[in-house]
Image 1 (cartoon, one colour):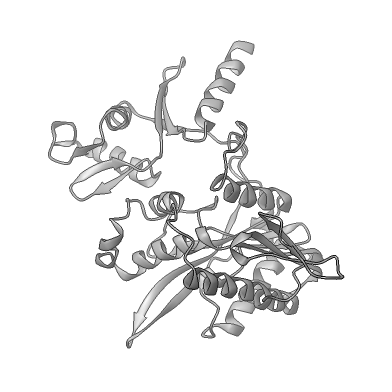
Image 2 (cartoon, rainbow, N blue to C red; image 1 turned 180 degrees about the vertical axis):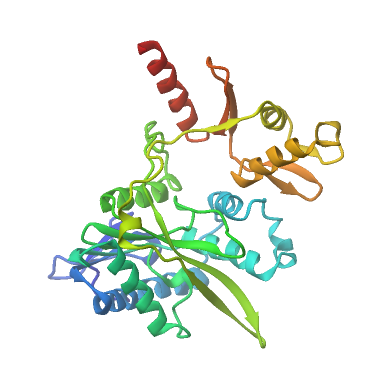
Length: 357
């Protein structure tokens, strides 16, 4: 049994402890756990990590002892595609992947089925950069110790008005750079946005969400903090971290874009994506992709870069859940994943704005 938890989001009714106002829940019914502090500096961060890690240990002890039945890992597989740029193979073929890529997949599936863990404080670091520096200092002090893998770290850390969030695809993620998986980012936007987003995303795995869910066009400004990669050396395996540095001035700069937009395509790119919307895949030797010009090859690479398409053996496939294309009244070609209805919402707003001009 865990110690007393400051706040939990759970399913079910729990069991009341006799002669108290306290309740216990089976760990498998815990959706999110909040460790609440008045202040959150390096010492409190270390303590919160230990406490939240105990919840995760309990969860996995329960999971191994009494498996929860078949788990739908589609959202973890989608996150994998958005991070590495290609679909995962069938589970029995995962060991054929490079070790670091296989570990990204396994970490994403662990994140999906684990309780959300949030370290939350009302005040703490005076700005975004000291929070970033404090977290990196905490990592450096404990590197090499058990419990410091990406999966074991909290899902979200809030210190006053500043946040560190895990890029585990639930819902935030970033594209792999070089060989690093972007795993933590910071932000000075309203922390409640991140709390709600990660909870709503988890609830969407369990129940049908309202029509408005995930259709907003706002984009939170994130600053990459930490990349990671799994390594094997001398018969041992572990994780390496890569720190991205920003100055105070850079962190305060406004983001390039705060409104979501689809991808705007060239004629050739539109032809490829529209073909894939009608068919499952296209072979590299088929006429559509045969004897490409240098310009067309560069445009095809752009589709890989933005994670609209990816390789699957010698074929190209869509990486989206439900891709849609549109030819806009101004002549532009647009495409995006519309599984949440966000692209449809954008088109509707675009057409409304056009009518008002």
